[in-house]
Length: 117
Image (cartoon, rainbow, N blue to C red; front, side, top):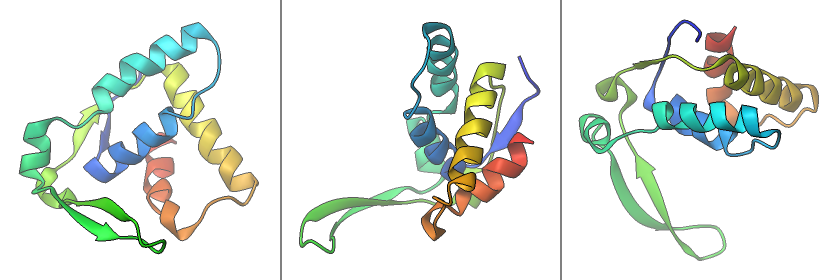
Protein backbone atom coordinates (compact mmCIF):
# COMPACT_ATOMS: atom_id res chain seq x y z
CA UNK A 1 0.00 0.00 0.00
CA UNK A 2 1.01 3.55 -0.68
CA UNK A 3 0.46 6.69 1.34
CA UNK A 4 -3.06 8.06 1.02
CA UNK A 5 -3.72 10.77 -1.56
CA UNK A 6 -6.57 13.26 -1.18
CA UNK A 7 -8.82 13.51 -4.25
CA UNK A 8 -11.81 15.73 -5.02
CA UNK A 9 -14.98 14.26 -6.47
CA UNK A 10 -14.06 15.63 -9.93
CA UNK A 11 -10.66 13.96 -9.73
CA UNK A 12 -12.25 10.69 -8.64
CA UNK A 13 -14.71 10.79 -11.55
CA UNK A 14 -11.75 11.22 -13.93
CA UNK A 15 -9.75 8.50 -12.17
CA UNK A 16 -12.57 6.02 -12.73
CA UNK A 17 -12.62 6.97 -16.41
CA UNK A 18 -8.87 6.37 -16.71
CA UNK A 19 -9.00 3.09 -14.78
CA UNK A 20 -11.74 1.85 -17.11
CA UNK A 21 -9.19 2.07 -19.94
CA UNK A 22 -6.99 -0.61 -18.33
CA UNK A 23 -5.83 -3.50 -20.49
CA UNK A 24 -3.31 -5.90 -19.03
CA UNK A 25 -2.75 -8.91 -16.85
CA UNK A 26 -5.06 -10.43 -14.23
CA UNK A 27 -2.92 -9.50 -11.22
CA UNK A 28 -2.90 -5.82 -12.11
CA UNK A 29 -6.59 -5.95 -13.03
CA UNK A 30 -7.35 -7.32 -9.56
CA UNK A 31 -5.50 -4.44 -7.86
CA UNK A 32 -7.23 -1.88 -10.07
CA UNK A 33 -10.67 -3.41 -9.40
CA UNK A 34 -10.04 -3.10 -5.65
CA UNK A 35 -9.01 0.52 -6.07
CA UNK A 36 -12.03 1.40 -8.22
CA UNK A 37 -14.17 0.47 -5.20
CA UNK A 38 -12.19 2.93 -3.06
CA UNK A 39 -12.42 5.73 -5.65
CA UNK A 40 -16.15 5.46 -6.39
CA UNK A 41 -18.47 8.17 -5.05
CA UNK A 42 -21.33 7.05 -2.83
CA UNK A 43 -24.76 8.61 -2.49
CA UNK A 44 -23.89 10.52 0.70
CA UNK A 45 -20.89 12.14 -0.98
CA UNK A 46 -23.04 13.18 -3.96
CA UNK A 47 -25.58 14.74 -1.58
CA UNK A 48 -22.85 16.60 0.31
CA UNK A 49 -21.49 17.92 -3.02
CA UNK A 50 -25.01 18.99 -4.04
CA UNK A 51 -24.93 16.95 -7.25
CA UNK A 52 -27.66 17.77 -9.76
CA UNK A 53 -28.50 16.19 -13.07
CA UNK A 54 -30.32 17.72 -15.99
CA UNK A 55 -31.11 16.74 -19.55
CA UNK A 56 -29.54 18.99 -22.17
CA UNK A 57 -29.32 18.84 -25.95
CA UNK A 58 -25.87 18.14 -27.38
CA UNK A 59 -24.47 19.48 -30.66
CA UNK A 60 -26.10 16.59 -32.55
CA UNK A 61 -29.54 17.47 -31.18
CA UNK A 62 -29.58 14.45 -28.87
CA UNK A 63 -30.74 14.57 -25.26
CA UNK A 64 -27.92 13.77 -22.83
CA UNK A 65 -27.61 13.85 -19.04
CA UNK A 66 -25.31 16.49 -17.58
CA UNK A 67 -24.20 16.22 -13.96
CA UNK A 68 -22.95 19.13 -11.86
CA UNK A 69 -21.57 19.19 -8.31
CA UNK A 70 -19.58 21.36 -5.93
CA UNK A 71 -16.10 19.96 -5.19
CA UNK A 72 -15.58 22.35 -2.27
CA UNK A 73 -18.73 21.19 -0.52
CA UNK A 74 -18.01 17.57 -1.43
CA UNK A 75 -14.58 17.75 0.15
CA UNK A 76 -11.57 15.55 -0.42
CA UNK A 77 -11.30 11.84 0.30
CA UNK A 78 -7.99 10.27 1.22
CA UNK A 79 -7.45 7.06 -0.74
CA UNK A 80 -4.61 4.57 -0.59
CA UNK A 81 -4.01 3.22 -4.09
CA UNK A 82 -2.08 0.04 -4.84
CA UNK A 83 1.34 0.46 -6.47
CA UNK A 84 0.12 -1.23 -9.68
CA UNK A 85 -2.77 1.24 -9.90
CA UNK A 86 -0.46 4.21 -9.31
CA UNK A 87 1.91 2.96 -12.01
CA UNK A 88 -0.95 2.51 -14.49
CA UNK A 89 -2.31 6.00 -13.77
CA UNK A 90 1.11 7.64 -14.08
CA UNK A 91 1.89 5.76 -17.29
CA UNK A 92 -1.54 6.52 -18.79
CA UNK A 93 -1.25 10.27 -18.16
CA UNK A 94 2.38 10.33 -19.34
CA UNK A 95 1.51 8.51 -22.59
CA UNK A 96 -1.33 10.95 -23.34
CA UNK A 97 0.98 13.86 -22.61
CA UNK A 98 3.79 12.55 -24.85
CA UNK A 99 1.29 11.82 -27.66
CA UNK A 100 -0.10 15.34 -27.41
CA UNK A 101 -3.60 14.00 -26.69
CA UNK A 102 -4.42 16.24 -23.73
CA UNK A 103 -7.11 18.86 -24.35
CA UNK A 104 -8.77 21.59 -22.29
CA UNK A 105 -11.37 18.98 -21.33
CA UNK A 106 -8.54 17.11 -19.58
CA UNK A 107 -7.47 19.99 -17.31
CA UNK A 108 -8.28 17.88 -14.24
CA UNK A 109 -5.29 15.71 -15.24
CA UNK A 110 -2.97 18.53 -14.14
CA UNK A 111 -4.05 18.24 -10.50
CA UNK A 112 -4.22 14.43 -10.63
CA UNK A 113 -0.75 14.23 -12.14
CA UNK A 114 0.67 16.53 -9.44
CA UNK A 115 -0.86 14.38 -6.71
CA UNK A 116 0.52 11.15 -8.20
CA UNK A 117 4.14 12.41 -8.16
